Length: 111
Image (cartoon, rainbow, N blue to C red):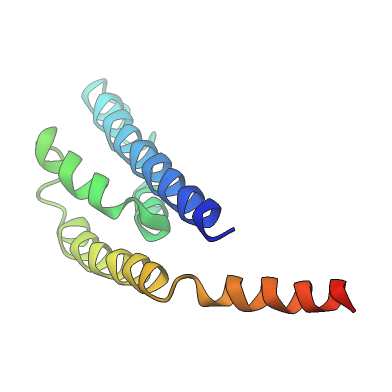
């Protein structure tokens, strides 16, 4: 059960980072075409909050886009630290809430 949860978390983090990278790329492409408001910064913030902050921050430098945005240049490193803290805490605690929950249900099924 624990290995399954770890695999799901790793797949989720890869998927959200790929989505974030593609989101910033599509924002740059739409900006180059003259459509400035195709992808809002709120979508980038939510994607970063959900775990894609690292991909957004790296893609900003890869595409050389949005580097003057003080909001993104300050918030994304903070979100990277928050995301890393959450992931490290989950893995170091061995997802304790899942183990306790499964043990609770296992004892109920035996009785």
